[in-house]
Image (cartoon, rainbow, N blue to C red; front, side, top):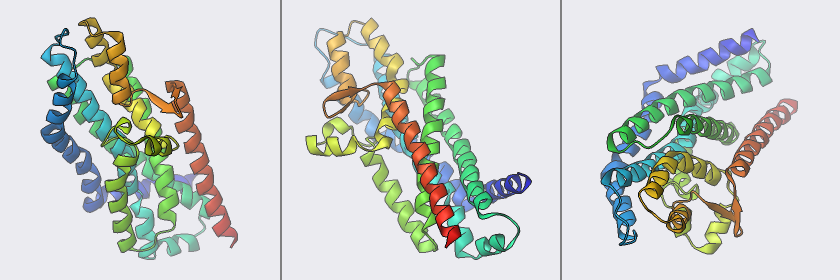
Length: 297
């Protein structure tokens, strides 16, 4: 246990000491927030207002709150996974510069070493994502706050599950990397591609039916939907209070991916939590199995 704690502390310290890795991980959510607010905000706003019934007049504040909820849900859903890959690059760097060989020669068991990377990545990623959550909540407070205390705590739970998912996924992928070039390639692919396949950059409802069914098999999709539900629930409830028909709100939830369907069957939030949590358990099991197999070899 003592060796594990020492290694975890060492890995977390090295991550925050490496200004390149730390600022890359930290600045990504901040840049996304600025870009989304500057460019996509107007697109989302025009999309909402153009499709509103002419008989319903909503306040500017609730529209801004809805737009803000969609923006921050996209940022948080992507950041929890992309930041995990950045945080976990230390494992690859140790392999590339020979540090891992030195650690393996020491009395530290390989299982302890592998789990120390996982836990350290989890801690570093969670700290970065909590900072990102603070920035996002501050933005929503400025444009239009309709979130309850329960919504904020549920957002924290969503972020924790997505960080666990991102850490497990990055641990498996990064286990097979051994050079700086591979780190750059994987980081670029994940940063540019994950947001699309999880429905953060573009709503899944805007894709074709075949692609929607393929994406419905990906667990990250359900994590994005959970974040959207809890970031936008208050604004949607306020829209109903201001006279928006329930049928229109349900259609809006379909468009925004608050409602997800698996082959035309609605997926409840409880099921989404089970899918995401079960995926985390499976991925961690695969990571442990990979390490055990390599150890035997």
